[in-house]
Length: 71
Image (cartoon, rainbow, N blue to C red):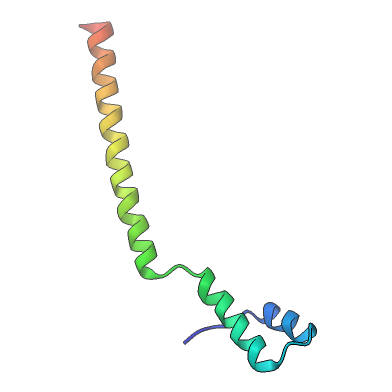
């Protein structure tokens, strides 16, 4: 089930594009602009990795600063 952006459809109709092609183009634009569940899952896993990397870096930076100034 795909949805259609009515503004895009109306713009194509106003430009004189046949109805079938206007509907197909509006649906294609909407389908292309939405993220899929796989895209979102990939982003979540990459963000988790980045969070761990930042935490690891912060911990070692704090350890070095502690060693430098307090030990």
